[in-house]
Image 1 (cartoon, rainbow, N blue to C red):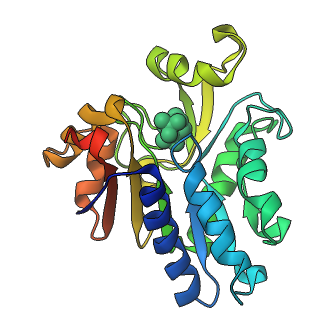
Image 2 (cartoon, rainbow, N blue to C red):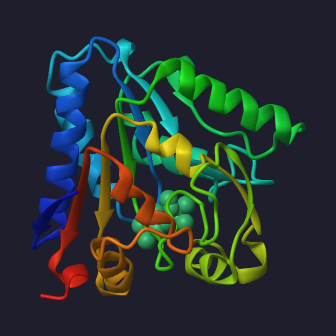
Length: 239
Ligand SMILES: N[C@@H]1[C@@H](O)[C@H](O)[C@@H](COP(=O)(O)O)O[C@@H]1O
């Protein structure tokens, strides 16, 4: 794993958007995996600028998002679909049919996850962007998730529900289940970029860098991937 140390959030966003933009330029039909959360917001801002001031044909770009809350409609303000449109898709011209988001309101969950995984397999991710939870979760794969997991439904831990409650009016409004790409789905990506920002992610970063690989720490699976870039700020590094 390669560690890129940055001192500001802007630097993190620029570094990450540069990697994504390079993958987009290098591939005729780029397939990029995207993440939500506060951390990648700046990356999307920087990537929008790069895309819109370039001659890249955005019709050729395909995207897959990592996860979605079960029970939230795509237009719900706290859904990840809404987040992605607000922060990225509404500002670029990637065709709607190339955008893959899990449907939180899917009537048949089994069909939803199976079809999503099949679509990922068929497209092949050129790069996957990730954030990380305090407990080391990536996407919504909580500690204890099998490294062999594919797209599935998870029960969110109280810690994750509490962390994400800041976006909701009330703790009880936070869904307790989510659809998520699995750890093996993420590992299929050719390249992985993980953003780790802030003092509250210090422990998660330290555990990832320790090199210990265990299903108790979902992010540790990344030690088994050939091309991972960690972009971490000084607050998370503890410098
Ligand atoms: N499912 C998302 C993750 O993909 C994200 O990495 C995490 C951290 O988000 P933040 O960047 O806001 O700390 O939040 C959620 O749990």
